[in-house]
Image: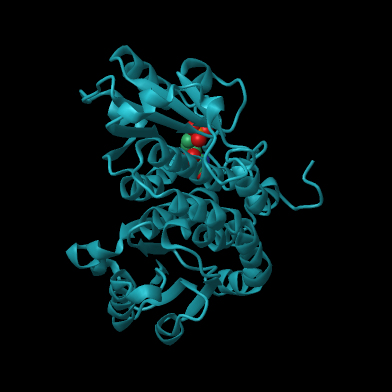
Length: 370
Ligand code: M6R
């Protein structure tokens, strides 16, 4: 079943491009307009939505965090992202105009299920973004938008993360379409950019594997890693940290790069590996320069910097010890390429330690207890 791959995780990372293209398939018409009839929620109901709350756990919650940046930008309504287990036990403000989006690969995560039940009891609509047909979470939701990543077997979620981002983006673009918050052209262009992503992801898989495994070998004795990112790079940093933690058993922490000076920089000592997700330098992106200066800050304290950057970024080349390159793409879509080298890196680190990458200790593929 592994189709020639050493592990399911390896196979599933290599299915990242297909997860994106299959999740896009059939969700727009010839003109490029979004078509989400399958969701069976009236357009008028969508038009009335004035707030989104994403509830999810682990990797799925990081997909939600990525989507927050895009949906708030496109639709101009607030998007809160909350860990399902925290959401359930406070007193969240829910109204019939709140759309709760439950993201889950398995569709069986008890924490997420309890959160969605609570939201429905309070009179909010719940839309599930789920990878498993007929599982409990979509069955108990008002509507479902399936991610078509195909079955994910490895405990560490990889291709499902990309598919979740794509599905949440489709939802955001659809809301923008019905609410009229984006020009049609802009929506069409974004769909075109999404359609171009699988080839870019493939380029990372093909072109960066070697430098990634060499870097893993160099880092095989490292006891901890810090991950930094800003804007959509922040959830990517959290996800990169989670991957390495759960399958290679290395202490990792993901931070928003702006937080560095508010505490985490105290952890940086000579040789400490720091992974940084660098935004595109195009369009005089101020965030790019801020992230580059974060690299300089940690380097000045002796950190070993591993950077994910856009091809041709001269600053990344100048300041990083190692660069994992990714093709250019619009900023909001960059998590779809930026996370890929981090998935491969975690896999290589775990392999070098001789670990069972598909079944890390103490973890289950779906967590069906609260
Ligand atoms: O099946 P779900 O998407 O609801 O699972 C949520 C988390 O348990 C899951 O993403 C977990 O964090 C993974 N082990 C991450 O790789």
